[in-house]
Amino acid sequence: MRLISPEAYAKTIVASVQEYSLLCARAVANIFSRPRYMADIFTQMDSIGVGSLPIVVLTGFFTGCVLALQAAVSLKEFGAVNMTGELVTLSMVKELGPVLTGLMVSGRNASGMASELGSMKVSEQIDAMRALGTDPTRKLVTPRLVATVFMLFFLTIISDACGIAGGAFVSVTLLKLNAATFFHTGYMSLQHGDVIEGLVKPIFSGFIIATVGCYYGLKTTGGTRGVGKSTTQAVVASSVIIILVDFLVTQAMIGLFGR
Amino acid sequence: MAEAVQSPEMEEFLASGSPVVEFDNVSIGFEGHEVLSNVSFTVAHGETRVLLGPAGGGKSVLMKLANGLVDPDSGEIRVFGRSLRKMTQKEMFEMRAHVGMVFQESALFDSLNVEDNVAYRLVEERVDPKEIRERVLEALRFVELEQVIDKFPSELSGGMRRRVSIARAIISKPDLILYDSPTGGLDPITSTTIMELVIKQRDVSHTTCLLITHRLQDAFTLATHRFNPQAKRVESIPDKGIDPSTKFLVLNEGHIVFDGTTLELTHTKDPWLREYME
Image (cartoon, rainbow over all chains, first blue to last red; front, side, top):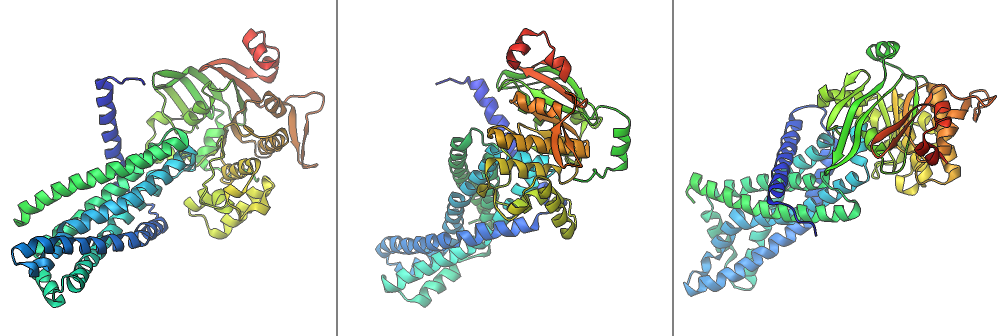
């Protein structure tokens, strides 16, 4: 195995960050200039949004179920089992809904984008696109970015709703709690800041999923093996960055709203 | 295909007699390995320049440099009289509208059918859909593949994919065509069909072109054959004639080892070239 000097390694990382930043800047700038590929945006919305719906619904629902079960065990010790609704709702809306949806969509779509664009790159289709006078960033990256940010926002809301429904289902059927109490305590616990926090996070996650997925796809080299490598790297990097950014956004929101 | 419709600026440039492609001391390397070293040559208007040389000699990189798909480490490349280095990204895309390119592995968009692949550039240029259909049919008729218009690239043979790629490159009636090993990996019969298309395109449209090939027989077919519009077929130039617009450039390990006409190549005294040709 060839060893790389620390200096060369540091330079590679800096160059990658620079390339990624330039790609993000170009992808965002393209939104504000023509030509816009509206048909591609709608195709991606269907693929990313509608296509991810089943996994988001199932993940959200069962997370809510588990959360209710686990919360009830702890809350019972304090005689506060009626607070299950509050705990499930707050957890889903502020944290689990956005993060889990981001991670699930990342696993499904960042990998999809990296492998699709990576295959295009190694088969010279990206070069052909440029040779035919089309900017690949405008045609491939910007529609995916717009579609992911837009659809992840709504997928998160659906995930939150499914999670709360899952928590209610377990609370009513297994914990024998009152459904009205569950929903009432949950609803009363939410404040504007909580909802805003839960809705800001998917915007960041959507941006990360699309740009990281496309970045790894477009820098693919080395044939089919390279495509596999890019796909793995895209999922790992986007998942880690989503959690990191989630921490930063949470910190910022606590600073803003005080909770 | 009909004669190219050129913009006034392009007509003016082509009439000026300046070279269409100009490489001036161009060098490029990847990961510390020099691929092209101080390469200089020109391609005149209407010329067919055949790039020969062993595999790994930097021919495909040179082709991508000519279309601005990769940037050189040093030196100057001028296409249609304009330096690629000084062009903005927008200008680069505008320049590419005058260039058709056939890739080594065809590089057809696998999610689009043949019609959409061939029509791609016209759709991007927002040409009227009725006109697009007509021009796609015309381009496919030129490569004799009208019958596969609804098929996807995965349903075509290697030779058919290469022909569709040629149709995609010529549909916009470019002023320069870059062929990157159009016969690479094909059987001799299909290779002959492809070379006949290249000759037909050269003699019908008189488009400037740069062509990479590993097969010497393809290169000499280009130099010794012509398209007969009456008989609608490719035939040998009578009296052992040679096409004057076909010239050669031989690359070896990133250096130009030959730049000249067919006769100069066949009468070369250079031992390496003689061995290569034999």
